[in-house]
Image (cartoon, rainbow over all chains, first blue to last red; front, side):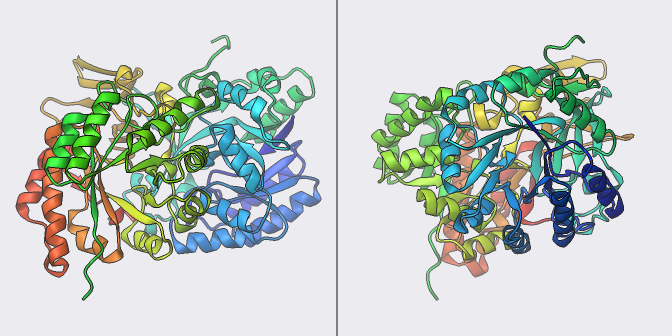
Length: 289
Length: 337
């Protein structure tokens, strides 16, 4: 199994982001996804910056994939998408069907991202015919879906599963971080830059529930399939995706790497893994409480 | 001046009485689903079995009204044949179109029933013309329902760049999240709109009177707590009150209904081909009321779009049935943008 680092979901200051990816060059991950997938207003790094980073990481031996925005609404979003598709060097992860159209038209290989809603083999076959070389299972799906998929996987298609990080659960046109500060989206003051791991929503009983990250809503709990790795391997998963966090990403990567290599490793914390087990996502199944 | 494009009024039918209410009050189309998870309103007591659907189709067609069947959830390999059988059944019954979200199912429908008209469901999450044109080129989609996240200017941009007919939500409950891209219910309850056709399923809901007030819970998670006399709402996660830092508020969205009546002339001018009314889970009385008002408004607007203004009586009738008894223009107009 290979390890990938998913696209950075959060908005970090430019230097923080550059420093993070400099450290990624030495982490034992095989694949790095780069790009802004959440909000088109974020601009600490532009496409050219990502292309520079991509080149550096490629020089360091990483396979680099450029990820598209998930919610593409305006003409300027589409222009940015076209520039990404036309980068002429790196494979693109399509996170919505407009991107698939552009990539397929140009006969470029692509990764079918987690928000394309691939839930069955017929849809995956269609995407493979259009050029998909890999698919990322929707986070809400689990082992049962994968088991059903396995005998019907198109030839040459690799399977990637989200295994660590706060789960991206929903996308909106509305910015919930701006809303928190009674700001309008177009004059949001880029408040999300102050929340390197999102802003936690608690229930009125004080239980951590969700995390607000601009227009994206995530789980407050960290999803963690580390203890489920034997099952993932048996299910034929090819790539494990780790989502970057502001602290501890190197340790998370190291723990997964060690387990893949057959060494003993643990990765604890207030985590959940319900989706993989066909349960509510926030549940933690199969570990001693 | 050219006559404006005709706009179809597309109304919800959660059952035969609602279907008849929609037909009797001026719907051009009704949309409905089978009684299972092949559609995104898979709630107990809703939807159509074979007999009621046949009766409904006959009733609608006798009155010149089209019937659209929503098969807008995502099938998986182990239940795939149930979805394809539902497509076959809809085609056999002679429905006027099916509303789909899954590309695999679209390919099946196109192959098995080349003459059956296909609509792209809002659950397909197509928010731009490149995505909509993708579904048109690949699967022959003839109409797309837009997610409730676009501004009016963005809707216009979509219409200007596609041959696909565009249907927009006009009234009813409002998803603040992009439809088809929301796993909040799956996270909390294990039941997902994408795969099970339900958000915040009734079986996970608890109402409980406590010393702190009336509490609503979803799979045990406190979604809201109401003071005496406060208007209560169904515990949908995105409409709950939560704490962020030291503040308790509607952290995602206030409960309110979408009502775009005042934009009708704009929508007509842009070339919107259909207005959708949300609410298959609502009563026949709701369907009758909302259909009647919108029929009158659309006719009024088509006669003289320049002088159209929503009548106070219409707004009052619609407010009576609004969630939270207030309404919003949603993303079409962005006070929060």
